[in-house]
Length: 80
Picture 1 (cartoon, rainbow, N blue to C red):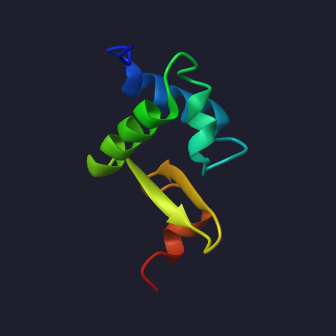
Picture 2 (cartoon, rainbow, N blue to C red):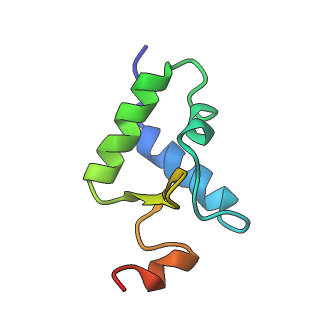
């Protein structure tokens, strides 16, 4: 199966709805948006959004998370 045409909006809506409590998400969190798709398809799509500059990866050293570019507590400390 292929992702729906509005997949980008679905991801952004998901992040917006959760933004009051979370700014960063694990890749597996995005699997719930597209339950009929395999993990590789979802990962490739998220990578595409990162490449477009919409999302960004953030690493704590032990975990890699994904969030909106420039959003979250760590955004102000980036590059220090």
